[in-house]
Length: 570
Image (cartoon, rainbow, N blue to C red; front, side, top):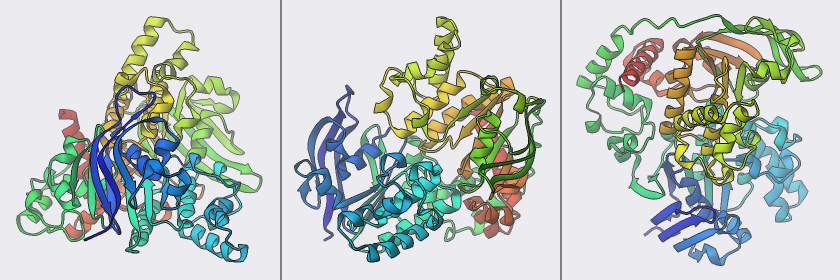
């Protein structure tokens, strides 16, 4: 019989600032050596559950506890947060809240320094762990100066320095580029090979996590555990759709083709999935059907880069001779690995950074002659880290703030704010304090606060980070309406290939400061060279195409067009 390392018994928790509990009647056992995925939509309680294991609850967040939670047989309420840290290591969803060192190297070494490990032993370990996550060239960098994905890598490396037998990864893929996300999943799996170590992953990106073996999936909704199943059984059920979780793309493709998914074996793994006989015939027929011609919805030029180069430090260009144009009505994915220049391009569009060489044009006007305020009336920017945008104490006041400083009347403010709050599924919690909601919910607050302005160009930096499928789908419906009805150009700076597939027509791809591709999204995601150069990863649709012997661009394009037809009918 396996040893139980985490046990919840009739457990409930209510934050001090809330009237209703966040967790209800939790009964759960996690065993030594298990690798468990805690899955659920934004606000389902999955991160709160993790915080009850690592001691942030009750030692950092005040609230009311009912029932019992034990770690390695000890009641967490009877331990200190330091005592729990010797048993449980956590990579937080919000990396900024985790850093303690003044440099990347110091942060990775923190646990070893506390244990008085000699420097001669510590330095090689720090370098090795930094190398594992691709941060070996940033050991002397200040963590807070790094990009979101780089911060996540440092946090993972820091956990590697802890000698603990329970590791919690809270949304580990949220800010990582696709290839690094895949590497992170593989790294976590390597850590799980030690049978003494228990791995708990908090995520909503099911397909990405299933890149490697998972023993059990704990599905949460509205603060309760609604399922505890092996991955295959969960995928075979209707629970994912019921609770707003994105099923793997290849499963959706098989359903679109009319395949009998429930009868198929090995649903967790696209590589071993049975694609023969009737299923193969149906898939081939579906993907060989001609997709409809794409809509032409382009208006005038909204943004143009004309041979733009930019450097934060002299002699080190972040963008190198970049030229492209964006037209009103376009939906564009700006993709590439961390540090490739995506966010810098967005700063140049917003005017908070200015080119070293070349020019940026906004609606045909040289942005060099425009102030940041003038550009801000035409360009809206939703930052990657919501904590850097939030100013007000409640959600409602935050969303209304941009309208109030422009002197808009109370009735108009209320109408516009209500529409944005509803679009982002925030209206029921409009009076909540901003600091009590999850990271994913904060992200929605920042999106709503910009959407109320209906700008000519809307830039969303990692809009799906921390968002479950249902939540970001609601946001995308509203954004699509702005795009379709008002002709707003939408730029998604994203690592999420699912978002790019479902919501954009064109992909602009950066690698090492250069523009390496600018094409229809299905062509970009089917191009091996672009995928390699930009540190992306092939989606399961690509793998499905290879297994069926079909051109990947045909499979991806057919899936995209059919998916949009389905959504248009909903």
